[in-house]
Length: 134
Image 1 (cartoon, one colour):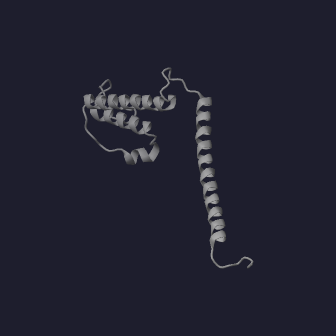
Image 2 (cartoon, helix red, strand yellow):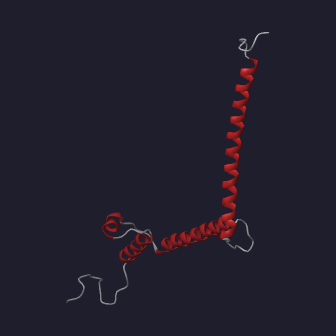
């Protein structure tokens, strides 16, 4: 009786639930990027009917479509055409960086002026008669 060494119960037998589950598990692990020995170690036995498996895959596809829409909306920034302009993104990043830089420089300059004013006022109005008498 040669062959592949895998008994399917007959030459033209339909796939069993176990073989379908194994194929689905392999596809899921491959989609997740798990291969080789890790796939064998990660696989678990589960019993599900085909309707449940189909619903899980449909829900996953819906989630991926939803996530893609959110990603596109974030990139297009509300552009009704959905266009992506690298120049606009570059200008927005440059504007935000420049705003942050100018804010930091203004704060540092204000602190330096306050410190210099404080020192001048202390020297002018400090008591102690360090000046000429007359």
